[in-house]
Image (cartoon, rainbow, N blue to C red; front, side, top):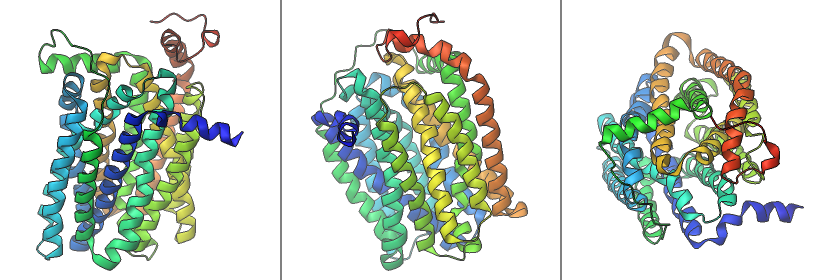
Length: 430
């Protein structure tokens, strides 16, 4: 039974393209998470200011919010592989500059913020390109949900390995600058992997029209199709009021748990461990049936875990709650990603996936600013609790909408051969 499950999870690895993609993704994202942990700790070391931590995430993610729609249009019309390679080259060069400044003790907060802006710009094009490229390198549609879940496993396993390297090994012994230089090396290796990919040729697009017209078409589809619209709204709530609590983790580690950079790294790693285990479980699913239920239950579990986390002063309890928060959070985002990727029409894939990046990476900078501002008068623990309660309310609302959404989505799955016809016979496509 276990062998069959493992074989099912690993089916996409039969394709050389996917193996290269998986390796390149793993290396690149581990470097990114390692640098993000170092950036947060460096900012807090330089300023000792929760508002600065909020600004850090704002500068990192705000460009993604504003530019992702443009990135989505490009992803639908030009080489996705080329976009990823260019983005990795720019990120690598940025990390070299920041690493040298940090090691020579000439780094200032504005330089950290500037590096975050550059990385935010590259991610606005790279993230939708990565998401859309998965479909181009997996030949069997039946294996698409496995490939999407494994792709998310890469992202969240990096949340375990990257911060662990940064927080428990590199920063205490060698400083943040070494993290940045290692990230540059990882970018170079990832470029080699992506450059060797041979994805399926993109279908020709006739009469593309204006960029803004293409953006409008993507928005109209996403927010006019109820299953995609409601999932995006739920993601906004969880990213804005839930995941943004990570902004305050350096401060929480020091002031509430009486810890240091190692404690901060352990907290991020515990989240990553829960996310990896949950991602692998999702990758073992046979179909998308039941994912809606998984999503709303996971939102509730995430909120409860965050409330308990925010009210503990024990490092051990905090790590357990971080584990459950990571496990639940990944179920929300991987489940949402899987449903949307399998529902969306191919010619709109880049634009719709850019909206997911816009929602996830755009809501978080605003949430980071809110968390940073509110934490000053209200306190770190109370701010996290309030955000968790808002997430739980959003999850309950989504639960009420779920039966109607299923009646709309399942006929689309039947048309594409993703679900067997016997599970849905009666509901026509709207």
